[in-house]
Amino acid sequence: MGELAARGLEPARVAEVLVERTATRPGRRGSGYRVAEAYVLTAAHVVAGPSAPVRVRFDADLPGEWSAEARVVLLAEAADLALLELTPVPPGLLPAEPPRYAVLPEADVTLPFSAVGFPRFKLRRDQGPGQALYRDSCHVSGRISVLSNRREGTLELAVPPPSEDVEPERSPWEGMSGAAVWCEGALVGVVSTHHRADGLGRLAARRVEHWYTTLPTADLERLHDHAGLPRRTDVGLAQGAETAQPVPSLAALPVDMPLRELAALVDALTALPILRNGNGTELLLDSISAEIAANRPRDPRLRMEVYGIVRTCLRYPGTLDQLLEAVRLLEGPSVAAERVDQAAEGLARRYS
Image (cartoon, rainbow, N blue to C red; front, top):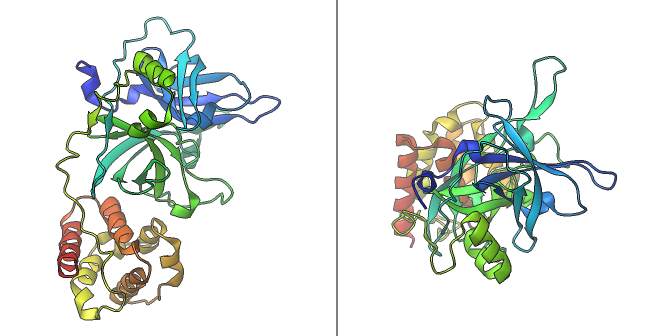
């Protein structure tokens, strides 16, 4: 695809997708990515419904800001995928080579990802004259749980959750739909939805590999011609996916295991900076199953609090793995996080 295609996510190609308000429908906002000189990928539900003017904007309020009208040339609601064509192409627009697309393996691994979009919780008020409202960009990074959401055909994205959910009737992630999901420099999916039941720390993205089984041949050819999507036999795995190390699972741990067996894991968790600062425990629990926060015993002593959280997780299969995944995401690479993984690996070996 050339040098440009190897760069992965380029911020200047991240699009705000703005659907204007009409007499029959409210305005709508989403995210997207310019995959070729005149074409932008986004989620179908952002632009679906009664016809309304669509505009895409790039680098808002920055020196290189520009925007253009767009028309929908592909609307695949079954795959929640849309392709927009700029009409017309602004003069002097630099070429945009198609990205590298890739599929992910059906394997017991979690993989790193990144995405940029414009979710509702990034709503800001300008400090200038008029104090206009605007949405800033949100650059998220986290991990893809490859084997989650297989029936739905989506990727589960573990993300740092917003600190507050101030509008229960609206998702704080509203507007992130359509953002391109990148893994190892390749586009592997498009953000589709936020399932509220999954908590604030999970998003779902439609997988590139499911485009091939969901879209009709004519749509796949259109994506090949205008967005650079490889034909099915030419698309490969994301770089590094085949060699990614599986994260040990603690799903096999017995519910009634002795406290002494949990001591090393609890010690490692208690040493995490995130659990020693303010509301870190609540932030961590907000990103996993709500049942844990609702049912765990509370104790002013941190060590006892952590024991209670771990024992509660054992009663709800899979949630201890969720807890450790949230630790990796929120804590990032650190000695403390490595110690948690080492303790978890030791438990997994003993009870596998």
